Amino acid sequence: MLSYTYMKNLLLVLGFLLIPSVSFASPLTQDQANSLIEVVQSSPSTPASAFTNLITTFSNITVPQAESLITVVQASPSTPASAFVNMLIAFTVDTIAPVVSVQQQAPTFGNVTPVQNIPVETVNNSPLTITPVVQSVVMTPEIVVRNIRKIEASEHLPFGRVQIDVSVTGTDGKYERSTDVTITTPEGTDTRKTNNQYTNNSEDWFATFPYIPESAGVKSITLTSGTLTKILEITF
Image (cartoon, rainbow, N blue to C red; front, side, top):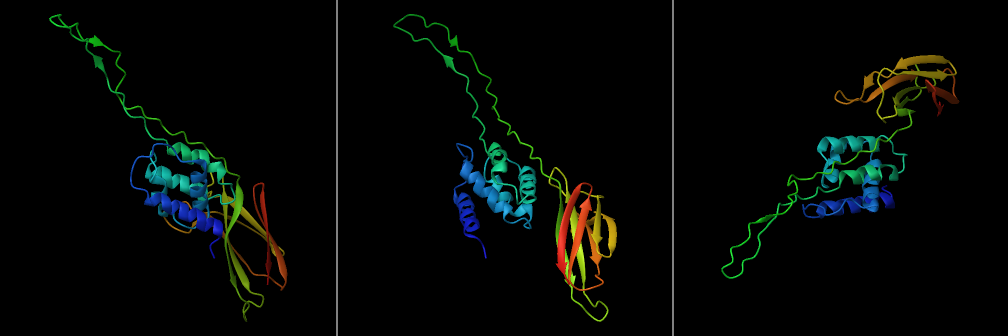
């Protein structure tokens, strides 16, 4: 069931989409940016493209930039939304309209010959564009358990069997490829590389570990990669 906070934020974002397509006179507010980020964070399994229109509704952000921003936000659901607010607001600053050159003509009185046009200093009339500054967000590397598939006990598997999918994220929040992950169980250890993909067109790297226990009960399973560690407890 969707939480009250999620529904509130979702309604706010939908409200953004109902606003006519006009240029915003000011960037997003802190509250608007927070709400938008929280909605994206609450759906980490939703493709980034599903949120692109929400982000590109605001000025000065391209589709690739929006997709990159959404991917980073989804990859860190535990990071406070406020950590991404300045990045999102920086994308939504409108450009400044071009300055028009002006010439001033002296007035004439009776038959007095008018004075030659007095040139006024002309400002470069090229549009002045403010380029959004993207703040780099340094993520904390971690071991991520993507999925645990459990097969119940049978004649050939008296205590059942599990298959564990594990990824490792870097400081950019992306899943790392060819990274060693070791699983340690009461029956021994196994080391594999994160070279599998859930899809062929994304860098969604993970390693798969099968585990067959030799007895029933609660099994403590330790995952390690470099200095990273994660402990699982699975009951058979």
